[in-house]
Structure formats: C-alpha cells, structure tokens
Image 1 (cartoon, rainbow, N blue to C red):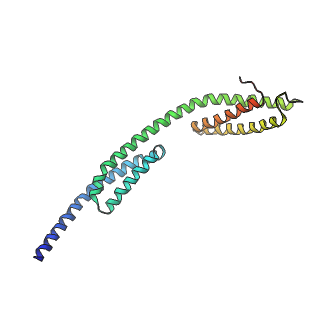
Image 2 (image 1 turned 120 degrees about the vertical axis):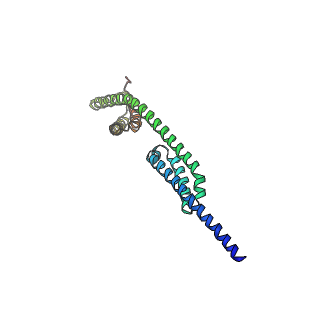
Image 3 (image 1 turned 60 degrees about the horizontal axis):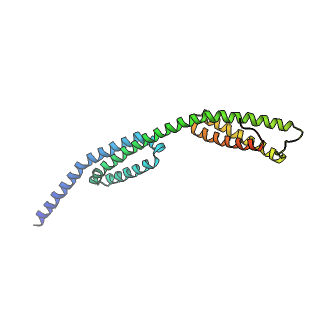
Length: 199
C-alpha cells in the first residue's frame, strides 16, 4: 500500500513538473515579446507619458518575478492585460507627441510676434534712457530714484531677452516664448515708469 502511494505521488509530481516545463516556454516567449515591445517605446514614453510608463514597468516587473518564481500560470494569465497596457502606453505617447507638435507650432507663431514687440521695446526704452540721461532735469512725473530703478530693470529685461533668443536658437521655441513674454511684461512696466507712449 505504501509503495503504491509513493508511486502515485511520484507520478503526480512528474505530471506537475512536466506541466510546469510546458508552461515555461510560452511564459518566457510572452515576457520576451512584451519586453521588446516596451523597449521600442520606452524612450519616448519617458518623455511623453512618464506616469504610464511607470505603471507598465511595475506590471512587467511583477510578472518577471512570477516567472523567476516558476509561477508560469500567473505569467500567462497576466500577459494579456500587460500587452493591453503597453498598447495604451503607445497610444499615450502618440497623443503626447501630437500635443507637443501643436504646442511647438503655436510657440513658433507666438515667438514671431513677441520677437518683433520686444525688439521694438528694447530700442524705444534705450532711446528714452539715453534721452533722459542727457537731460538737465527729468520731466514731470519721473523721479530720479524711479529712473535709476527703470535702468536697472531694463538691464534685467535685456538679459531675459538674450536668454529667450538663445533658447529659440537652440530650437526650444516653447521656452523661448515663455521667456520672451516675461521680457515683454518687464518692458511694459518700464514703458509706464518712463512715460513712453505705446506705438
């Protein structure tokens, strides 16, 4: 009786091992396929869909741990959902790229207007400062300390404008436009302080 029980247990174990061995190959292939698919999109995903990438990588690592623990049935059960998640990640990346293209196009258009406006401001403010610096007396409504403050603000504005131009020359129209807007806002304040008429 005991011998027969041992043989039965041995047969069951053999079937179990054989079943696991049969599941190993498809589980390995499934993980390998997902790993390749994820590698293809990983760089872009880090830029355009970082949160989605983190979630997919967490799922992948969980299935990888199951594979290493020889829980091949868990791997095979979980791969369809992970494949779907990778597909959604690719869609998110494509959407992010399209949004980035649209934002870049808008920034380039905005830059053209800002570039003309800020360049004109710089010329006008410089001319006004030169004029007031040569005058024996500042005009009514402009105090000496305010004039000195405006000159200092103008230097900061020019620095901001130089940084904006540098960003645009590097190809980052979005950052360039943001800095140019700041420069224009500074220019508008100096226009008010120095009583420069808007043209």
